[in-house]
Amino acid sequence: MNRSLLSPRWVLLHLVFLAAFGATLWLGWWQWESAHEAGGSFRNLGYALQWPLFGAFVLFLWYQVARMDQRPPEESSGAAVEHDEEPAADVRQRRRPLVPPPAPSVDPDEDPDLAAYNRYLAELNDRDERG
Image (tube, rainbow, N blue to C red; front, side, top):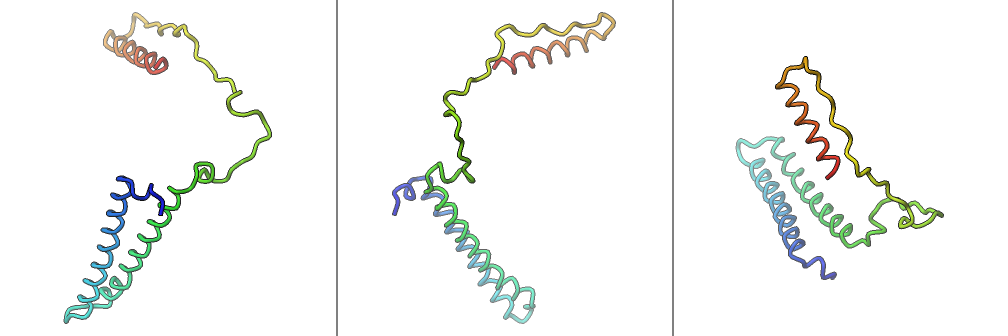
């Protein structure tokens, strides 16, 4: 067994999956008992058969998540595309200009509150572009 499946994160995940599986089995048993009571119906019987299927799906999901977590990163990225080009380290990154763009001009005919709000939005936009 891989030690990463015993990490605190995975122990919590194991408990969550086991609780979900146990809950689906209990709900299936409850519906089975309800179906056999005097007021039971075929709906209860259908649910009694459906809940264990949900439990099986929980186990399948648990297996898939564990398998995906154990896979090396290059395999888990999906369909790998091979390139005959240079490595990614040689790719140049685009730099942003150091000079901020000029603030938008405000018409004197505009409402002063609207102009102040527009200046505020322009400052927020500048800060967002810089940082």
